[in-house]
Image (cartoon, rainbow, N blue to C red; front, side, top):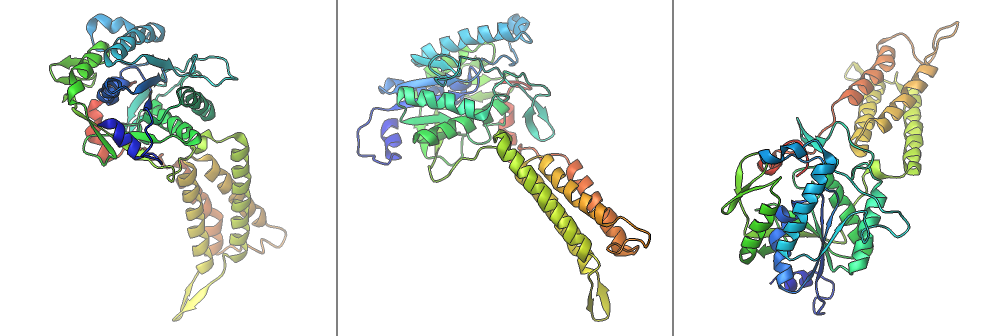
Length: 404
């Protein structure tokens, strides 16, 4: 049974606590595709189930020809998908559904709002943010606001478990990733176990046999006619290939001792400013030390090695590459590069007697141009996407260029 399994991961498994499970999903139809069988099974066993849908899927694709007029009309598509969602939830037995930002899913001090679908596109590295996202979209909203809204729901229903996507958002949709980040953070703050949805065959803490709820799951998928086509025991999305309706749904608990992190882009301005200042100082310090020591040499067996300039170039590359990787963008690395190059330039200025610190020799020219070329290469290098080869098998289950 599911309930004892969930209780086993609580701190006090011997306590008999009625299950109150909160499912957090990004768009209408995700609840049925990823967790429909589990939701129906929990409801049958007497658990209190709450489903929060973050957006109304305004930017989704549409499958049936008779509904194609909805595609590209966010308001009409949202209204239609809301009707589909209500029908699917009724099939699954859910009586407590909330849209994030609306009544019951909004931080008490904030006025109600609608989080809209952020959209996505397929790039060379997989799922990527859409070229443009609306200011009211889920991904454009402050991270703390989204997490606070979800924490409000956890507190309201006294959830004993929170379920949402894994850290990759399943196949990488930006709204799925944001839902994971915010739900996980809210669960951690509220002291509630967080369960990440796992793909078939992946390591899992809980594997739920939903074979008794397959008919309900299939009917719930049929309710999402604009997004899902169901034929017998198989379904397909806008991408085309059909897949079996899974009789097992898997989850992995994220332990409290595995702290979640807030993405750099979601940190406050104060944290950003502090990092920029430190990067500028470190870059300037590296530039000063490099200028003073770039002429240092070491003789080995009659061979003179310019260890000063070698160290300068290696440290410059390590610093800038490290900053790009750590902060996931170009700005912090660019500020450090600016600080370094500015100091090198200032100390290289020639007077009436020429430059004392940077003579016109090989090491001097390498100091003058080497760090600049390294900075140009590091900053111009394309961003590395989150789509990996082990996710390619999941890609056919996605829905083209927009929301699921």
